[in-house]
Image (cartoon, rainbow, N blue to C red; front, side, top):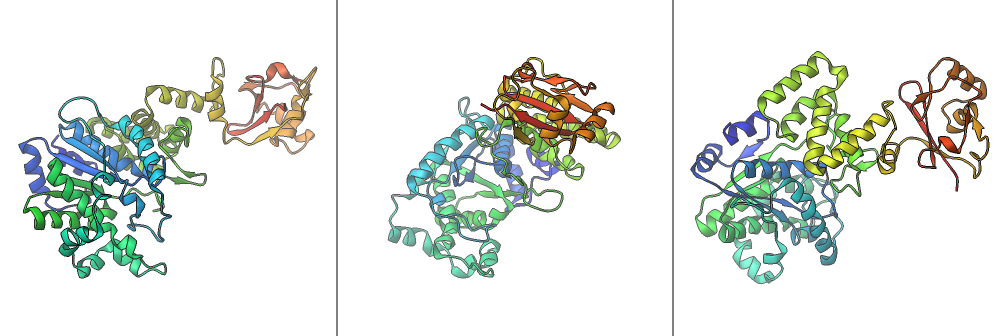
Length: 426
């Protein structure tokens, strides 16, 4: 499928400076494009995936991506979509963050092979050495304040209680200079970004036209939201990060497993590289049996594989099985701990499992799954109690150190989905 047609099918085009002109240019041969990522943390999060995946789609179509780490613009902070000014980071913090982010980008982009291999660029390399007066003369004179304050990203902040600092107001000029520099030095003809970047992107195309009389394009994709319209990529526990040290592969996988039915069709098209026929088959299967969560599992599988690799995907699927009653035979400790990381956990007193240990009734009460010994007995008689995913019916059953997984954990379940963990004291 034509790349523009594919992006359109997936609802990945919000605006373009000249869509048919871009289609024609892509048909003529490879193009160089860039997408910027300000390194405000040492990890990107799932809200950044659209930019990375857009670069990936272009690279797979034979084009050259330039992921840009904003080592300079990150020192300022983009006001687009923000209600208040960011905390300013030091150059050392930004350098550390840029180094971390390159590793995450390499999971989705090929930096090694062919003419279309990705190249990470850092705008600090061409910005930090430019003097203030030089920048005003060479760049600032091409921008009217009237035009800048008319941009939605600026207008929204000007109308807010927080207002807009001069520092943030300058961000548009810096991003425009990035596009101009890349067009001049790297023959970069296309900038892509989220729809909140439209004002910054078109300011860059204007600067290129004025200074170089050269053609270039800007394309934005829609910002992704959840079913309730809230910001995508946030949970009660915080952001879903791409770095597995911040968000485990299991939690990442579960985030997509838990996709709302109303959004799974859109997310499959936007977040996976599956061909159209496969997508339509998944959507049909989901509509026929939504309770099976076939589409959600496919979504979680594809995006976890892309971001974390096959090994992490296998671990995440294995961990998921644990909390659906799957066998614990052969499970690794790190996989188990990922799975139960957010399960209510209580500590046992030191020595509680020594000797005969405690009864299963005591364990149910201590874990909080049963409010009293009497209720624990009734739960056992009802056949709905499990220890380490094995059903327990005998109220006299003792629980000892021999039952402790990895010498530390007891996994208790009541009913289908009520889990608790008792952790052995040191």
